[in-house]
Image (cartoon, rainbow, N blue to C red; front, side):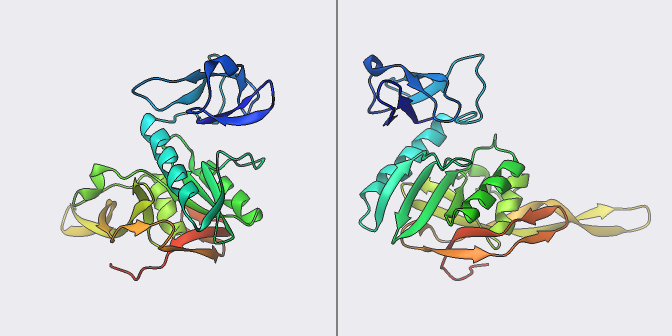
Length: 244
């Protein structure tokens, strides 16, 4: 995690601004003491010490940390953005980055593969209850440039939630929308060959988007189909026309 509470004065501090002489630092989720880690290669961050197990910050890679820092720094400098904060404590949820964009409360969640689908659904519902519009952002992967791609369960869920698009982070405030088109494969039976809907999809990329320019707040009703269930939600959705 990138922020912690400085115990002697109760102030929240960012890892890249903190000094080891200011310790102890505590996690603002579980209140356990955390260690400041700063080096020349990895982004500064706070880490729990074994045997403490805390869901907050668990499974966070170096790439995820740098993504969160990049988005936070770009948003905090933008003239249309105010009250930008990293890892704000909202009780049941702690968004990676939260802010007001043109007076609209938003939350940006950098999707970690370690997060369960139930956790994503729960947090989405919590943001809706608090009147906050959320954008889930997984990191862009080279596999999306292949002819076929097998979305993970949470990618399928995001695709359904965001009306047929998943937004992947590229750099700064730039993201790329991807639509997954169904793909049917031939299966040979005893007497004939027939087509079957494949678990793989055809990834269709749209033009890159800018978070502060190309998105608008949108509310959606609860929706379900087969194994997918999306709760009532407030989402940040792009305003560009369909490319697929």
